[in-house]
Every structure is written in structure tokens, then in C-alpha cells.
Length: 132
Image 1 (cartoon, one colour):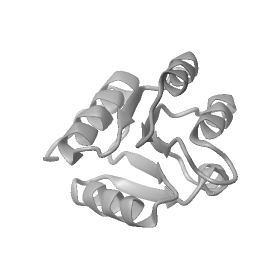
Image 2 (cartoon, rainbow, N blue to C red):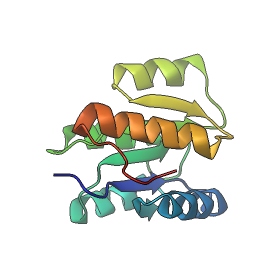
Image 3 (cartoon, rainbow, N blue to C red):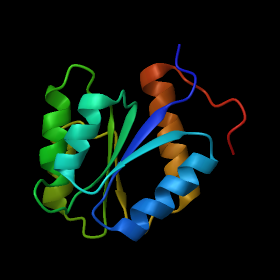
């Protein structure tokens, strides 16, 4: 049974990543982080991740490339794609790759929490006990 979900935040913007990780930790999640897609693959090889939050535009491996790699993994956690520069092509590709949701930055924490909890409920039948 899933007790405390583990989230993976992958974003090359260290300030954004740090704020997001701290905020999600305060909400009761276990949070892993990666600065780019290659680091995310390393984290995924060592840690069970329930939801991956993925920035689109990153060096070394884009968010869409990372989603493709995640989809090929045995556990393939759902992915929430995030970008400050969304366009129709990115949204189409994300839909084709079955992204759980595509969010435009800046993202409100309440919006992100709702999306995460929705994904956890849909995929794992998990509901928060005391999260706010």
C-alpha cells in the first residue's frame, strides 16, 4: 500500500526546483530532485518514484525525451510536464506520450498539488490523509 508518495522534480532552474521541492515536502510528500533528464534517469534507477514532474526545456535531455525514457521503464510513473514556453507542438507531443497533465509556468502550488493528488488517486487509488 502506498503511504507516502515519492515525487521526482526535474527542472534545470535550480531556484524553481528548490522552491518546488521544499513546498511539496512541507505538504508531506517525499521529494527527489534532478537538474536535467540524465540526472532524473539516475534517480529513477535508484528510487521508486510515483509521479515525475518534468520541465520541457532542459540541457542534455529534454523533458519529452525523458518522458519517452520513463514510458519504457517497468514502473513508468505518470508524468506532469511543465514549461514556461508551451506551444501546440509540445502539447500535441505530450498528449501523444500520455502525459498526465501539461502545466504552463508559472504554476500555483495549489494547482500543482491538485494535479499531483489527482494523478495519485487515478493511478494508485491514493488519497491524502492530512495534506493541505
